[in-house]
Length: 355
Picture 1 (tube, helix red, strand yellow):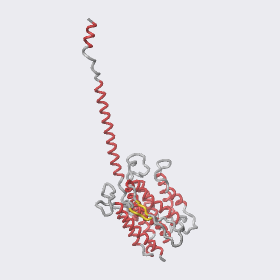
Picture 2 (picture 1 turned 120 degrees about the vertical axis):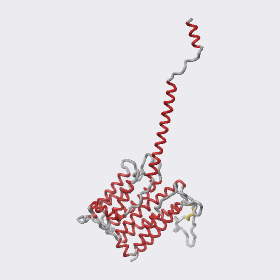
Picture 3 (picture 1 turned 90 degrees about the vertical axis):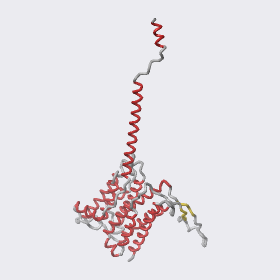
Picture 4 (picture 1 turned 180 degrees about the vertical axis):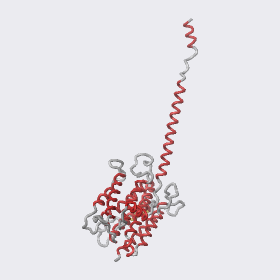
């Protein structure tokens, strides 16, 4: 009988699955959905942060800002103070804007962003040029004069790698550059300190404007190359030509790679943003020189063109339409402002060269 009962029980089929199997399945499903929800939430948060961090800083009042800083620190508004204080403010804005300094980020959303790092690099270019001018020209009475010690420390700090993450980070180096400028500024505004100097002369200003013209000219060419165009090769060696022989002029098609068009555009925006502030400071400290040369209007015209290039870009992306096509070409519009500012810089240099 026992054997028959065992056989009869086996005829009913295999034992049912344990009740824990459905629970395990639903538990894994819930965990997968929770993980997917966290990933989606993370992407939404980082996307929103990336959008917020992509907002370019607004223009700030230069002369009023320098006056407020001088009153806060109890310093005198001597010649050169506005230029140094504005340079410091430009770098501080670079480091302390929403999201901070992004070019060396290793995690999202900064890792995914390329427009704001291009803007930051454009600002750095103008900061480096003016810091070099301060060290080389503005703070020295003549070519044989000793350079200022703090400015000699500031220039290499700002020329540090803009994508260094740690040991040291770019932010720490640029902050050290600001600190060096602050020490120079403190000595410059102290009547008891005779070591810090600032010479607001036409030749000093002209040397720096030469660098500005070179930067703007290069930007104009790079922006115009957003649409492919034929360009003559200007790097020709004519010294090897025989008398009466015509040089062979080569043509080449110059076109910015499609993925680099927005980078060049935002680099130009960054340079124009920084340069507009620095020129407003120069207008204050070099007011006497500009008035004697009848060049004040020229400086203001440059500033107007640069500030016009800072208008809001309403398109969600940088468009690259043809010159006379249906779609806009934002790079060509920016090139127009940059070219006009460059032409005004060239005219300004001619005025400064006049006796």
